[in-house]
Image (cartoon, rainbow over the protein chains, first blue to last red):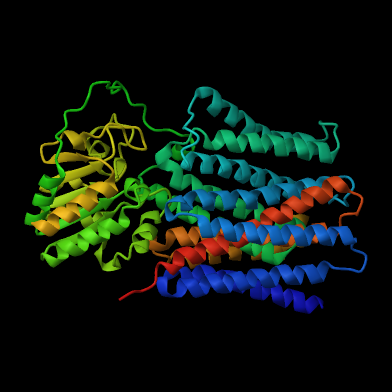
Length: 462
Length: 98
């Protein structure tokens, strides 16, 4: 029996590696996902039979079965219902569940009723798993709330300072405890740490700027993986250790990749540090030119090369399908249409690609930022749909701007820029956009989907 | 020193896993980063294995821990099932068409 379980765990571990490996091509990715899922089921089922003895109380089994059934059904329902635009929120929420599970395991392990680990190493690992799990748990929930627009950035010195004190405490207290200075039982101590870590998770995510959300989600994902790995070490369970570390390593790697795409160091992101916008608290209205649907359609009808810069606004308006329609019409008129996608467009790395894939936009038409910038001056018209910060020239030429240093799509270098915007509000980073004041830029106010549909209708007439 | 001696196998294992993890995902193109993240998220749900091991050993009259364990199993399962289903849904749209 023992051999079967070890081999089963090995197979599960291999299935996780394959699952991640197959993500390297859109063709194989689906198979990979299936393989990883089968490996997971194998690991879970084997674990049950490995640990099952005749003496396991009836009630434990009932609770387990019920929890598993409800968990599966709820997971399926959530993922069936979610809009592609809401994907980052849901992923963040699922991440919270993993962290929460790790935290609870630590709490149960530490309970005196339970034969808790007496060895110092095990206790340290247990605490590490519990703290990382708790941070991922509350942090991901706050991230989810922020993405859903229910919680605003909250960046005050009080929050940042308290968070730092908590972080210091979470390192210092265990040291003091193990030296024997804190005279409470292990269980009480662990519950207290769990509480501190949960508060820290909230305070840790609250001050982080909205534009940095993709980085935070990826980081939290990684932390959950690390929590899983720590817990796995407590149990000496190889499939947990391996699975946890794969996720942890992948998450850290992605996090650093994204930081590079935004030209921000991870430390700056974590500190919630955007450059203080000194003196540009401009209440004055920007000088902007408006453009009508008819004029936009006319410009497009004369254009040879058009670029679309999609942003979250396009996604929110569910305009990706109309956008694809516009592309087809323009292509029939021998106009070339490209999409230029900023690496952190959307609320998650690669999120915009998922949305455009949903609208059947062909991949050959998608250009990455650098590629698009090189040929920017050749575009007759650039349509900026619901993107703000990623086309803000201030990132390149205004050291005082909070977005300064972030690589941008240089839409302003095109012959003409039309920005589709719902209203006069600022972008996600809350910054004025200098692009709007430029001579070659005009703004088409209105819902992106409605405007695009009207443009399509007009183009059919021209 | 003793600690390293006794746990050298685990240490090797952990170090190798870190390298495998990074190596495997470094080839994933940016267009698939969202499914990758969500797939990885589902894999971290392997923590459910630990929850099951624990749950099998909680005494039947320890209601506090039974409750916590039940919640832990629910959360772990939700992580796994939600993660894999949502990744599958996203990947469905990446069909090579036409």
